Length: 130
Image 1 (cartoon, rainbow, N blue to C red):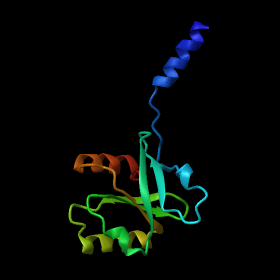
Image 2 (image 1 turned 90 degrees about the vertical axis):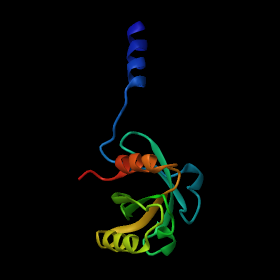
Image 3 (image 1 turned 30 degrees about the vertical axis):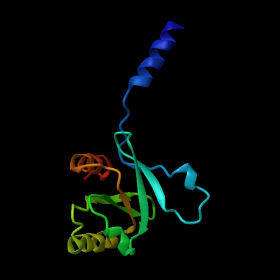
Image 4 (image 1 turned 90 degrees about the horizontal axis):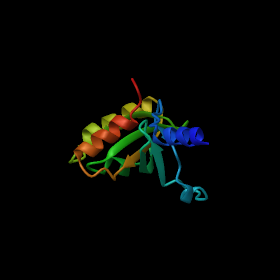
C-alpha cells in the first residue's frame, strides 16, 4: 500500500510535455452553432483561451498586443505571431495572406497575455515545431 501511494505521488508531480499544442474546446460553447471561443493546451500543459475568427474576417487583425494563431480546418496551428503594440496592418495583412495560402482557415486570438514576456512565452508554447 505504501508503494502505491509513493507511485501516485510521483505521477502527480511529474510534468508532462506534449509534442504539439492541441485544441481543447470550451465545454460551455459545445452547443453553440457558431464557435466564438476555444482554448488551446500548449506543449507545457498551460491553457490559452482564444477568440475564433474566419481567415477572411478583417476584425482578426485589429487587436494590438495579442497572440495570433493561424489554424487549419483540421484544427492544427500552422503559424503563430504577436500582433504588436500598434497592430501594424500591412505586416498583419501579408501574414494573413501567407498563412491562408499555407492552409489556414481561421485565426485564433489570445488576448489574455498581460505583457510582452507573457505573449512571448505563449508563442513559444503554442507555435508549431520547426
